Length: 594
Image 1 (cartoon, rainbow, N blue to C red):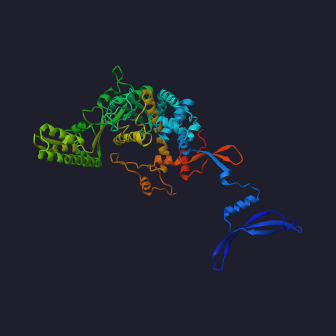
Image 2: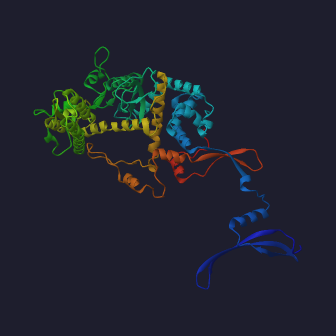
């Protein structure tokens, strides 16, 4: 073969451990264009060019071209025809499948797919039904569940279908989390909240006590039933003027008649489980006692506690000289246990707040007194109206004595009333018929304080995560379906928050409390999270909502390669946080939801 014939190829030479004249160890790499040819039966090489000075990626391109690969500009080699956010909906859908939520909703079909999409959307991006329908086309949820083309009528039909399935869905959740196998204490938490409505035509709309601070607005009430850990199991919607006791009666009937759960222990606040409700709790329609009585745990109101603290009453300060908890009995509560607690931290906090409110009221009254003294405001009636506006601002009127004449206003504190209220600071008394052999005093306190989990669920449902309020639906069944969707989304969120605790600021292992009366404490690990802001690998901790937003940056792309019209779905390379999020759920990152 002639010397000038033969193919040219790239040769890379690497020298390691070379010691230069200064005694330094150096590593060298070089690249050459060489031609191989045969001469007189022997294979020889000729260096055509030294290309060591070229950048590595250029040398790679030359090498690939010489090997026969067809090189094209990067923009022509691969085309991304579509890209949709995927990670957040994929994570929520994966957890929903792990929990068996699709089967829980009902038989497979179009209605179930729409209902599941509504629940997942409420977790990932809560919004109106119209905005949700439009959003489905912008994420992989719409295409994978086949709901991207859904109309508003389709969504309303799915809501009606879901509302008809509510009893079956909640019965399964109740047996799953309130049954004796998983809940041997047979304990359930129940509380009531409210949200306002837009519009005036809903049959459930009424004016009542607004827990959202929307005075005078039409609203609905809804009661949430959970297990002792705050895991939602059922929700019931009531007219906006429904009281706590009536809602409690309604949920007990559901537990007994629809869920078939016997001998439960209901935990509710002092305004819900009243003496009248207690008396009727275990009576049948004919007035006889029920064979499967329900227990309960609630708290006494301030006047009842004050009566127990009378001079000859069973609740005396000396009981708390060495402890914060004491069990007492009273003839006024036959067959019941009274667990009295004193929280010094709460007492100090209430005393401070009361003094702040009293001082704030006196500060507002000072200009009014000056106006009267200067003669700019006269007449007992006019002075009384203005003074009433001031003392009602902070609800401290009961602690002030006002002396009003046509030309004077004198204000003094009612110290006796202030002292009487201060005597109750930090005290609360729980009442229950559950025997000590089943639930000791500290366990009673813990059970009642677990109502904080229901309050936490309400925060998630109403504002933090699921944005239930305000309610825009007009038909009663649609309102109930909307609240049910939010409850199911809260159920899904509860499990996601628990699974993702290592990636968020959530306290993974709250410390056990030796004294249940004392305020709860965060673990040292949780405090370290809040301080460091990053884990050992340098990854930032997220809020729950922030983690969902980070997962949304994992898209699914439709890729078309040069020379073909076929597109291939591909995920971008996930971050370590995104990988860990799916690992904590217990599933690999799915390319599609189905």
